[in-house]
Image 1 (tube, rainbow, N blue to C red):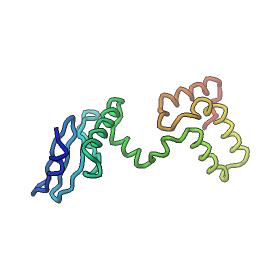
Image 2: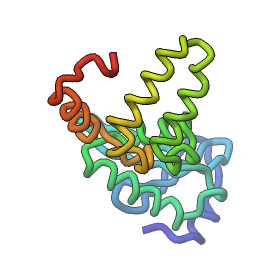
Image 3: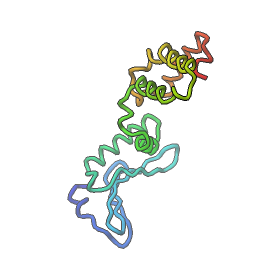
Image 4: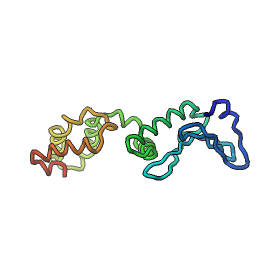
Length: 164
């Protein structure tokens, strides 16, 4: 296992090289001297590489923590690279907003394009069918099986054209 002293002492060489830590984590040192943390793992029978950040912005302890988070995502059956990409695109602030907050913001953005009757139908359907179940949940906690179970309830009462 690496120590912080060994990481600081790693210097550029003619070729890029890596210093291994544990459980797939290593420090990649480029020929120019740039140091970055990388996590090597397997997903769907293929070897993958996830860059966790540059040293010293990401310390050894932080890199190990990020590796453990990636391993948790893998145990859930998801690719950590996709989760990281999604986080960069969506941003961290969205995950703390509730579904209802985001849905109402979306509705407000669409209202100018819609006829008043349609706008009313959309918000009424959300308030009746979706918000009681998902309204207070953070977006990050809503997954496909949960959403499908809610839609099955709507379908079960015969409202199959509610969200088409």
